Length: 209
View 1 (cartoon, rainbow, N blue to C red):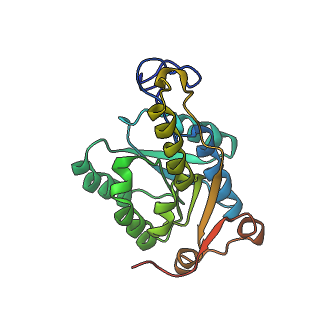
View 2 (cartoon, one colour; view 1 turned 120 degrees about the horizontal axis):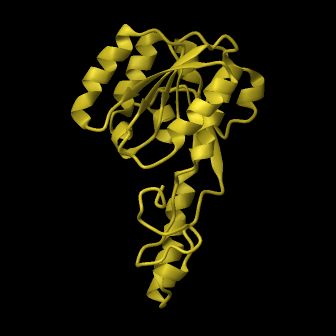
């Protein structure tokens, strides 16, 4: 979140010499709990792995939605690469029905390891970026980052033609995608309801090498 991180003054009027596109969409975080609950109505607890150094409000949104759906949360934080092993050890000792990974550059670097843990534990893993589902997580729901990357070219063009960054509003995501890893669902013994599959923008049926 560029505003929360104090990089810009506001999305509409960034000020200074910075503008662009953000793919942070905090309100989508709660939707992932809703999807997990729709897939498994007996879901009553979830681990949450998050990076407190990442300036966003996803954890707060997850906590609000979890309370609405009577899902107990176990929080595990990592803000350095060398903390992952301790976090995984702590998660192995705990018991919960799902794992939600708050997406950040740090957690994305370990997405395959996290997906492997979830598969071995036979629990669904959800996150906000497609790469987590491609790595073996059950689902991802969030902004289409390919589309966002393409919008960067628009800003480069405007600035090269003389526009001032301070006058260009920071864009927020307009297209979202739900990715379901059906192969993972089969491996952990979950049946994905047709109502969820129909809404999926992509369904992964084979494990990527």
